[in-house]
Amino acid sequence: MIEKSKPLSRSRLIFFGLPDYAVYLASIPVSLYLPFVYSRDLGLGLAEIGLILMLARITDVVTDPVIGYLSDKTQSRFGRRKPWLAAGAIIMSISAWQLFAPSGVVTNWHLLIWSMLLWLGWTMINIPYFAWGAELSNDYNERTRITGWRQAFGYLGNVSVLLIPSLSGQLFGYGNLPKEGLTIVGFMALVLLPTLVFLALWKVPEAKVTQKAQQNLIASTKQMFSNGSFMILFVGFLMLSMGTTWSSSLFMLFAAFVVDIETSTQTILLGFYLMQLLSLPVWVWVSYRIGKKQTWVMGAVIYVLATPGYMMLGPGDIVGFCIVLGGYGIASGNFVAISLSMKADLIEMAV
Image 1 (cartoon, rainbow, N blue to C red):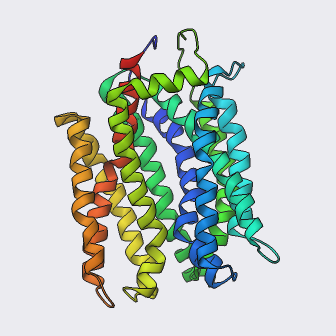
Image 2: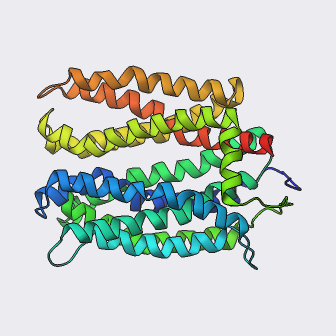
C-alpha cells in the first residue's frame, strides 16, 4: 500500500513525463518510416522487413513479464524501477541510432538484431516506468493526471518526429526525404533518451511502497489471469493495440500507393499527431466527469467506426483520408493514458 498520495506538483509531473518524449522519438519511426525506407532506399524486401519486425516484437512476450518480475524484485539504493530505466535508455538509444542511421551495407541480420535490442530497451524502460507511475499515487483521478502528462510528452515526441525533420529541410535543405528525417530522429534519440531519463530519475523520487511477500513468476502470472476485470481490459487493450499497430505500420505505404499522396503524407500525419495531443486533455477531463471505463469505451467505439473508412479510399481521396485519420487521432488521445490508469486501479484492487 502506498503511504502517501498527495497530488504531484506540476514540475514533478513534467520531469516524470519527459522520458516518454524520447521513447516515442525512438519507437514511432520503426513502424512509420522503417518499412518504407528499408525497402525503397536500402534494398531490403518488404515481406522480409515485415517478418523481421514481427519477430522482434514477439520477443516482448518473454521479456515483458520477465523484466516486470525482475523489476519488482530489484533492491538497490536507487529503488526498484530506476536502474532498469537507466539501462534501458542506453540500450534503446544506441539501437535507435543503428536502425535509423545505418552505415555501410544493411542486411536482414542488421535489422533483426538492432530491432530486437531496441524493443528490449523499450521494455526495460516502459515496464518499470508504467509501474513507477502507478505507484506515485493511489488516488483514482490523480493516476489519470499522471498518465495524461506522461502521454502528452509522448504525443509531443510524435509531433517532433515529423516537425523537426520538416523544419530542418526548410532551413538547411536536409530532412525532407524520409531517409534524411530518419537520420535526424535517430540522432535526437541518441542524445535525448539518456538525457531525459536521467532528469526524471534525478528529479522524481520513487514512492515508498510496503511490499507483500513476493510470489514467483508462474504464481504471479496465474494471479493475473484469475483477475477477471484485468483480463477484460487486457484483451481490449490487445485488440486495439493490434489495430493501431497495423494501421501505423501500413500508413506510409497506404498513403503512397493507395491514396497516391506521398508528397503530402508528412503534413497529414502531423495533423493526426496534433489531433492526438489536443484531444488528450479533453479525454482526461471526460474521465473525471463520467469515469475511466466509459471514457475508454467511447474512444474504442470511435476507432471501430473509423477503421472501415480505409476500405473506401482510392487515389486522390485526400479529404476522406483526413476524415478517417481525424477519427483515429481523436480516439487515440484516450487510448494509452486512460487504459494505463485503469490498469493501476485494477491491480491495486486485486492485491
